[in-house]
Length: 161
Image (cartoon, rainbow, N blue to C red; front, side):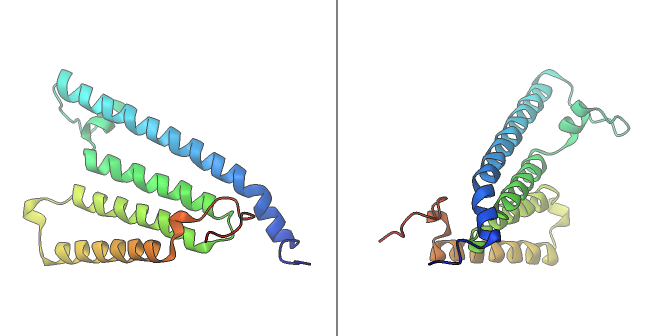
């Protein structure tokens, strides 16, 4: 008799895992739709308007117009990583947390690169990029070695041979 599957925490995780992943997918789709709309509006404003940022105006159009594209993409990547991390709290496999960590590191790198100019490139900016690339590489290697992307959602399935 397996007492591990009858533990109240395991029963709760098993009951909430699929709804958590469904909610995560819906949130990711909504964030992706928001990103697509923001990028279409940004292109529209670039082509059909004068593309002037007003510092005192706080309208949505001005925020989209004044935000750099890489920064916008980085913020959406970090938000999606947060949704994935929250959904993975309802699983029994902690090594799957490396996937949203890698996504968040990519978002942080893009956010750092969006604010970087030629005049600001110094040795510590290069060091920050080197550390971010090293962290992303180590997380990627850990994902490849542990095979976290091949783990099925159903924990009752027999292991792969």
